[in-house]
Every structure is written in structure tokens, then in C-alpha cells.
Image (cartoon, helix red, strand yellow):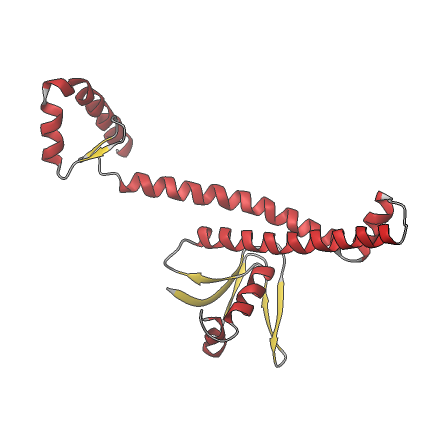
Length: 203
């Protein structure tokens, strides 16, 4: 379910000139609660919502959806922001290089870097690098959440992990019948040892 809370998972403060002198300001790793009037403009399908989503991608902010984890939403947001800023950086630096070449200006890395700095492109590049670093951190968190969720979904009373693919029985009794059959004696040994280790870990 979408909430009215805008999150900023980036390192940069957001200062969005909304309209009528109203600014949406969000500090790094913080949030801003939209008014009901503002929230209407953010609803998918409403006029202008696509343009607003594009701006959100560029700023690196997202509207919290409680049906998803914060980390998963932040990761998607950071990826969108990284893509938008990297594209802007590559286009701007590419155009500048082509312009200098057309004017017959000899390539000089130091002079070019100074020009990038004056145009704010070095700062933009730093933002792109910072976003890439954060993306890696959030990717780890999301991967761990998926692994934990999968582990939580395993019912040890009904699941046999030692066959490929793992087999989930309808009931605990059905599993016990399967394991009691002579040809499955080795699987039963593995299962019993696994359950002992699992139970010991839970204590």
C-alpha cells in the first residue's frame, strides 16, 4: 500500500521546487510527508504522474510502499537514480569532448578535468560513484532478505532437502511414511541429523 512518505536513500539533500514557492526538502537518509493535496499528483495514472516519476528518479527518492521492504524499494530507486545521473554525465562529457575536437582543441586531461569541475560534472561523477557504492550495499541487504524469507518458508516437518529438487510433502505424516521405506534409509539418516542440528540451533 502506498503511503504519503517520500524517502531519500541517497547521500545528497533533495530540494525540489514543487510549485508556488513550496519546496520539498529531504535530507540524506530521511523522509518528507506529503500533504493529501500533493499525494494526488503522485498517484500512478494521474495527469503528470510520469513526469513526476522521472523527476523522482533523477532526485533519487521514492514513495514508500508498505507491501515491499524498504531495502528493496531503496535499491530500485538508487538504480534508477544512478542510471539517470550516469546518462546525464556521459552525454555532457561526450558532447564537451566532441565540441573541443571540432574546435581543434588538443586533448589535455588536466584541462578537461578542470572544465568538468567548473561545469559541475566532477561533482556529478562523484554522485554517480556514491550511488554505485550504495547500490552494492543495498543489493547485499536485499539478497539476505530473500535468503531469510526462503529459510522462513521451509517447514522442516514436511520438507526433504536432500533430494534434487527438494521435496515438500503435504503433511508431516506423508514425509514420515516416505522416510520409513527401506530404500530411503540413507535419506532418513540425513533428515534425522539435519533435524537434530536444526533443533539444537533453535534452543
